[in-house]
Length: 477
Ligand SMILES: Cc1cc2nc3c(=O)[nH]c(=O)nc-3n(C[C@H](O)[C@H](O)[C@H](O)COP(=O)(O)OP(=O)(O)OC[C@H]3O[C@@H](n4cnc5c(N)ncnc54)[C@H](O)[C@@H]3O)c2cc1C
Image (cartoon, rainbow, N blue to C red; front, top):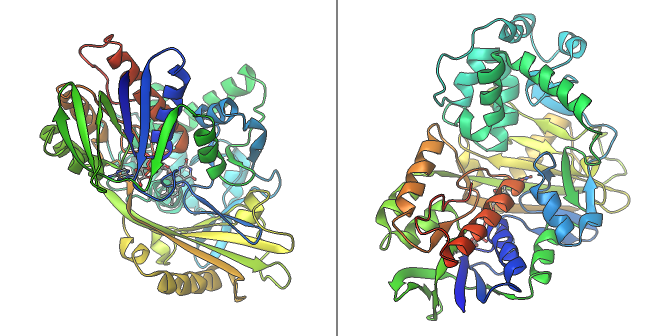
């Protein structure tokens, strides 16, 4: 009987566990997931309060990457998937003291329709002309990594960076666009420039091919589950009966054992394993591996994290001062506000607020405003109320509020991230039976973490079967 231990019960660890569950009928394996927190799911967590469905962290996943939808189907909860509301899909940018609609036809930040782009008041005329220069500017001479800011400034100009790329794209990563890697965060833009030179021409060509090539997708761009994303977490636990899931169990130390690894738990227990998947944030994996794999730990320790927080507010619809006619808004840093963005949750997703109520959620913190996310809950709540009063005109008191802190929890992919990960992968070859999974490596989104956790499980199975003596590619990519 070979023993596998997965440290960390976030979505990456759970996806790995479920992949191993699929093999249990074919192989003599024992698999245990150790989770330090009181519940599984890691950053994913749903609280249901008086009919409000409140997501602590992620609220949806992108459908263009199929892994989350596929996992839901495998788990038998495909019929629980719900998309975003089909009407009022506008997203706004808070600029010059008001909310301005993003022009139609923007593909992330690339204009693919002429008229809405020409008519939008979001950009100045010089800004629009500068963005249009993308059509004629030469491509980058080499294929080295660069920052998102440098990439966007070079191709589309400063205004596109300030009003779109920085609040929307860097916002997804809670990052500073001046330091984040274009290759590791938006490889599609990097590849488009390499292939087509112009981002606009590249996006138009891709759109044409997609329109001609396949039937329209049954999914909206962002998907979630009827009763919140923790439905997926619960389903993994329920549909993996051969795996032992233990929560409230923190791994404190790792050492070598005869034929494998020994894990000392904070509660004084210890476990041995033939293979271990560390599905913990990089800094935690680094401290656990420091003594047994110092070079791997050194690489992991270089992956930075920043603090964020989410603040969800529920209101009575009656007398509510804003129509919430869209999915929400983002705020460029130049506006000097204290929130990064606000999702109009009850307009974006169905089943989120009880009858007669609305709900919205604000994001705080990130690379340039970490201190704001580290305030205590009361101060943060007060600050967010002031911010939605100033940006949306809302003076009503919420009937429900929730603050969730993510201290030093949002991984940052800085310029050169791919090289750093390749180096860690190289060092890992000298550490048999140790594998890494999670958002620190090849993608932060839920579908990326599911893919990466599943791949880590496959690498473990190959390793235990002796099929991969060199253990190449142990980091699931
Ligand atoms: C506010 C916020 C909003 C987000 N929004 C979205 C979104 O809408 N869509 C999307 O796709 N992605 C979103 N993300 C990103 C996504 O949620 C994460 O990248 C993903 O959930 C990370 O999963 P993971 O398994 O790698 O790590 P985690 O979820 O961090 O799991 C790691 C687990 O390891 C456990 N652990 C730590 N130390 C130990 C130890 N010593 N022993 C045992 N266990 C330990 C932790 O308790 C934790 O449960 C968001 C993230 C945040 C913070």
